[in-house]
Image (cartoon, rainbow, N blue to C red; front, side, top):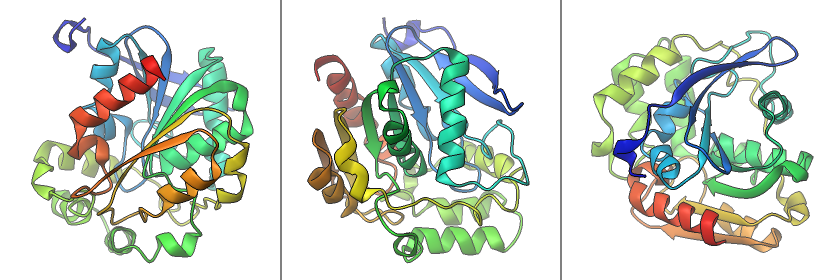
Length: 276
């Protein structure tokens, strides 16, 4: 099946046992790939992965493109503490509600940290991991020294984020910011206006490096050497500790490998999923 032959993704809501409602896109049939987007004002599954999941659907995979709590069109509780444990527990409940017993977790940045946390918490659920510049392999202070994080925090704290403020932050996501289009910025600015004030101040993700040896599933990773948000040296931490890991490192590439090198990313992931 080609991407042109695919039916449109199903726009769905899952209600968790605690009443939280999570929005997701459901596209394709076959082995399940769950897509976990990164952090940042206005982030959502669609804005992170719209150029990727259709290729996976055409290749014979079911794609669950999730909006994490606090993001996209999912619930955004103002009284939550957005820690790694919070995200992992909600993802775990989400998978149970959907009846998914085995899947590949694919995560970018914060989504990568959540994928790692889920694989450590419930390894029986996770068949493979695909990680793009994942968080959770440095101390919090290291991330907050990165140029992209500093600009994001300062811009978000300054007040409402319109399209130009969003452009100011997201130019650092890519090595070539000309790939940012206005539609993406408008989409993310609209979501940012709905996000709770405590979302980023309570976002605590521990350094999981010393636990990576517990992972037994195969891992495919990607990292841009020009990443302004997560230091690319994190790739070596995963390679040194996780038993079954491989990484593709790309120069002239920032934090969004799946956007800047979409064709390479899609082909490499599909090969990993189909051939191992």
